[in-house]
Length: 121
Length: 108
Image (cartoon, rainbow over all chains, first blue to last red; front, side, top):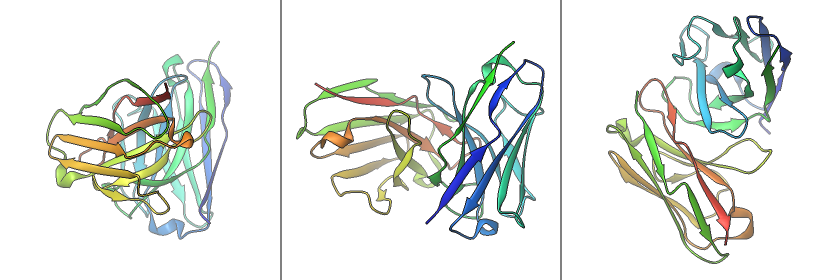
């Protein structure tokens, strides 16, 4: 069965960096686009970033562009989110989600349980 | 970017009643690339509907989606106790993908 397991969350000071990981199993990871979506405490869902199946194309929400980098290692079935220059408003649960196809323009059909990132001094 | 506005914000209903949730887009959703998700407290979202009207695998047929262009609807024909949750619409036809702010379906 499809499994997505996020890790790497925690408490970090404003301006610092953090890298999230998402381990995937139960499907052909290298054949699917992968997304990061976040949810601030008590708030709705916000799409963050997507990478194509082979990592050659990436896209970001304006709120994180230039600060966050999505990447993947298909040999390790792992998705990453490098988050730099973190701000208090980046505090959220970060979900890894599988795209329904290899390209960007698809819904997300499986989600991990999320990892909490808290940006606070 | 396409802004999705969901209404109502909260829907108070009893088990067995029909729920009708609305999602309106600020511009036409390309190819009706509109999905619906259900989220319960402390859980990840779960896909219900894609392509405006196609139920995901394992989703009961009491859930149905309809609409096109800028107006979309999620209908739950008869609410079961496990259906009380928050529901989000999402458009994935234009970049960036965007979500609505959610509709909470609560027990009356």
